[in-house]
Image 1 (cartoon, rainbow, N blue to C red):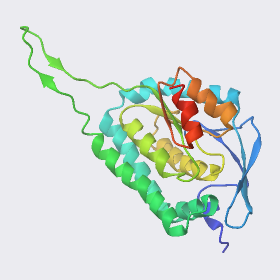
Image 2 (image 1 turned 135 degrees about the vertical axis):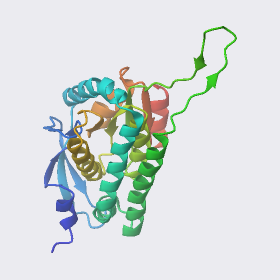
Image 3 (image 1 turned 90 degrees about the vertical axis):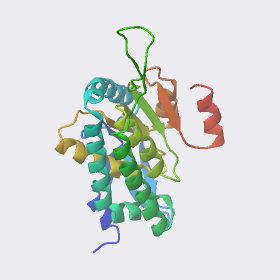
Length: 254
């Protein structure tokens, strides 16, 4: 038994695509990057980045899936998140090892980060049945006043290398139960963590015959993908986690 068997368990190969619309994987047309373990400097695997053409394919699918996803009742969307959380529970040990091997945390902290995703899935499931709105009395006869929240659309999520699982899940799971779809641009330093999670989510969505394009993954350079995502007017909300320099650049655009 190899100490890297967890890679196979998570569906990871020596060369992987960095572009997915949920259950489907696209052949990226960007550069080929290496995932390098800080533990010993070894190459874990290679990932084919997305380019702008791939980004357009992904966002088109996200736009197509949004009207369908938003019409699914919130408790049913919550059920998908519940199943995702359970699937992550089953893969917790392997995911914890991957976080440790690719990002550099000790194994226990890797497990702790995966637990953060499990916890946010549980939290989001509860919220899916609590999307309330106020009902108010009107002074006008025959009128009723009430709040009704509507899904926003596509949520862009940019994450840093040091929390390659938790930060994305905090954003994506809440966005999902609210009826939004998401596009994830992870750090190129930890691409395998995002690919492993995408495999898990894709399996859940496929088994439940959910629309393609709810959880999207686009791995690529800041110039080709991150800046394109931040400047895209089709994406009404950006959540970006990273350096101070990155924050200054993003805040000037959103």
